[in-house]
Amino acid sequence: MYNQKTTLKSKFTSFLFVVPYLFLFISFLFFPLLYGIYISFHDYNLLSQENPFIGLENYMEIFSFGSSLSDLFFEGLWKTIQFVIYSVPLLVIIGLGLALLLNSLPGKIRGLFRTIYFIPYAISVSVISILFLWILDTNSGLLNNFLMKLGISPIAWLTELPYAWISIVGATIWWTIGFNMIIFINALNEVPEELYEASSIDGAGAWSNFIHITLPSIRPIMLFVVITSTIASFNVYGQPYLMTRGGPGDSTEVLLMSIVDQAFNQRELGSASAMAILMALIMIVVSIIQFKISSPKKQGGN
Amino acid sequence: MKQYGKKTFLIILATVIAAIFLIPLLWMISTSFKNDFEAIAGGLNWIPKDFTWENYTYTLFSQGVDVPIFTWMFNSIFVGIAGTVIIVTVDAMAAYALARLDVPFKKTLFSIFISTLMIPFVITFLPLYMQFSNLGLLNTYAALIFPYTANAFGVFLLFQFFKGFPKELEEAAVLDGANKWKIFTRVVIPSARPIMWTLAIFSFMQIYNDFLWPLVATNSPEMRTITTGIAVMQQGSFVSSYGKLMALTTIATVPILIIFLIGQKQLIKGITQTGIK
Image 1 (spheres, chains in turn blue, purple):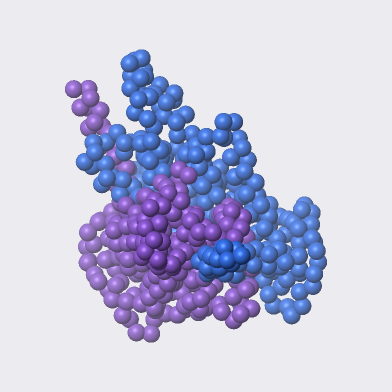
Image 2: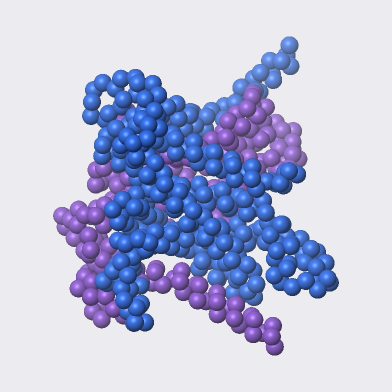
């Protein structure tokens, strides 16, 4: 009896530790999640007083091909997917390349270069975008002025295809590559030294070591980097919003820009919420697929 | 000899890449000391022909302009610190209890928290906007702070640490008759300081640098954060005035760069720890 009472009291005091976070979690994550689904089932206009329940109609309109909402969603989605396809392989390969380069440098200068490559990661997307807007300016920008010195005529980096995509992808890589590099450096350091020693006895070269030892050893981390980069690229917003304003035309108007526009310029919050929920579902499904494809049967995730 | 040549090549390669990372930042600083005429004229001069502080004095001190830059900096730093303090405190308590104490349904609770790490922000930012709008709390510090505090990342990070925390320290304190709160504040927290700093730096950088949420949650000039404020200026009265824009972005970058350089070790530790697990 006495014992039961103390455990109950103990459980209660332990629970009190979780209460503050639980409160914030419910108020600003769990409730909004449900509220978002609720809004997406309504004809919710920011200006109108009445927002009638319409069930799945917002979703059905997105999937009735040819409707303006459907076009808005799928065209935005296509541009986002384009950005994912252009950026993710580069983010992974260059990230790994920089990590390999740093690891082969003498220890004394390694830290300095690591810091330099990592610096842009600390800067906000609006600073990065405006800085690149300036550097890529057709007439006064640093890059075109440099190219002109080399005898190359100016390129409209932000207002013509494919340059607009190249600019957005380039700025993104410059900004975030340090993060992937740090993860790869750590993964490379975890590869057991004995593996390389054994293969050097066999007389294997650096390339063969890389293919047969390094890559298989860092496979789980590679998957982690692919998934986090994919998610980050899906969320792209600031770079096209500030650098190209979605142009030329609407060729770089990514899905998140369309959702924000639908919500705050068209003020159609109901259909914008439905678009947002579909986008989130796509992101979750894509990361699950990536995980399933790349994880070997003997579960090497840890 | 061949080995020596290879080393030199790698160092040269690393230096060229370093230049690619540094040149845009140096150009930003260089442009911020040029007058608009010289900036627009283009060219490759790194040292301004007509060196001027005008862009800084104008953005910082000019009367009656729509650049309340001190207010924006204050907002960003205040919101960043307040959010970080809440996150570190609340996450440490929750993570410790879930890892070490007899919280009812703790496995279920932890799984629910962790599963939300997969949920992208796009799904909650519109309902959060409506929530704060319904409460009349758009354009307030509450709107700029609280949405970040629900993130389960910190609980996850600290949970890992507390799981591996040595039992003996706690047990010794129990024998001394200390209650859970005393054990937490006197024994656990001091030993968890490094990992809590890691979480603090992560959180501050995330909040200070965030763009979409503060853009949506504020529209009055005096409630903007620095990151959204400069975006507004770029589209407003500073459009194509790159000298002033670069002064503005330089000012915005200095505080976060200082924090980054000081906290780099902690930051790297945090990235690698979550990367492996």
